[in-house]
Amino acid sequence: MTTPRQLRIAPSILSADFAKLGEEVRAIEAAGCDLVHFDVMDNHYVPNLTIGPLVCEAIRPHVSIPIDVHLMVEPVDSIIPLFAKAGANIITFHPEASKHVDRSLSMIRELGCKAGLVLNPATPVDWLDHVMDKVDMILLMSVNPGFGGQKFIPSTLAKLKQVRARIDAHMAAGGQEIWLEVDGGVKADNIGEIVRAGADTCVAGSAVFGAPDVGGGYKGIMQTLRKNAA
Ligand code: DX5
Ligand code: ZN
Image (cartoon, rainbow, N blue to C red; front, side, top):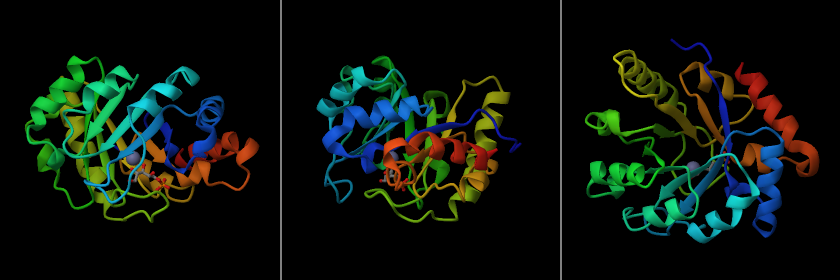
């Protein structure tokens, strides 16, 4: 059940140098990362404020890999079309931040993007009960959302196993493919157990952009993450 499947690494640009974002995303694509993880915070759902659709549109021409937009905003529906228009490929949101979760998920797909739900460390997996056919990604937060550079919460490992079993059962019954992403505190020394617990897509912010050798270091970091996950 937990043999490593195709692993995707999604560096979070939250820890990148915002003064040279185009260069930063080009560097991570060249280093072999699979997705750009794009953290959107609104100083309402989370106590921090980051970037919006304009920045998504600005980086879009710099990379060909998918942009994975993680919405930490409330409400979600009004901002979804703006990100779809700005070139997002995947849009995930926190279900408790939407009044109509099924509608928000459908809207994302209707706009041509992959849709996903994000569960905080204390958010129950029951939120998935009636929408398994509507999600392309499930993102489990392994820190409380709002900031990069926090410590991985170990109870996420049990939750990953639980959600992996649900996804495997869903796919075995003929359901669509669903990616299982984990976000927060992923480092070279814990990515192995995270992947063994069932994750196939790992966000890594400070582990990638916070590295001392920023200039040419991304490839090495990406390789170290992959090697430790194998
Ligand atoms: C936290 C964000 C994460 C964060 C990850 O709210 O959603 O994507 O930037 O950063 P690290 O990998 O440093 O924990
Ligand atoms: Zn994130």
